[in-house]
Image 1 (cartoon, rainbow, N blue to C red):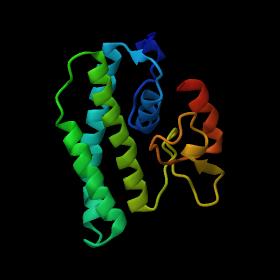
Image 2: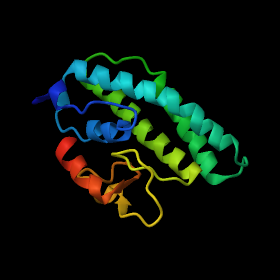
Image 3: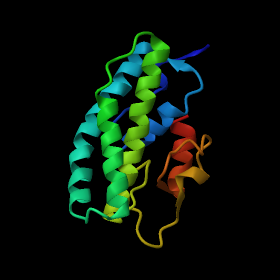
Image 4: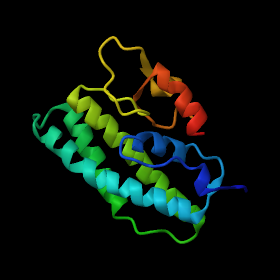
Length: 164
């Protein structure tokens, strides 16, 4: 198996975290252990920041509100994943960080659903009503793997060029 180097990985910032999670999940080869560790640390920090915001949004809705109930389940799963210790071996650690990446995408989607504001998964800017945007699953080369969200059409090439 070929290894992905840290130079291949996008620079992680909070606005690019969902795109970074998608990039990490889309890797066809095992990244180097240090790359996996860095992604894992950043995904953990992002989740620890995002969980309280999603909790607050869910709490502001009724107990029987379906989007809030789904978000609470996502929060529980994210917390469970945050509690998982580093795994032995590269494959085990990649599996653990993949789960954190899935929680990044899921909680971001819950945040968007609870606020009613859709953010572009690439540029992290609000997608205004009537903007030229599309479901992320339509542009993702690895769609169908539970990566919800929306993206500006102008950001499509950014995903394909910079994050692949």
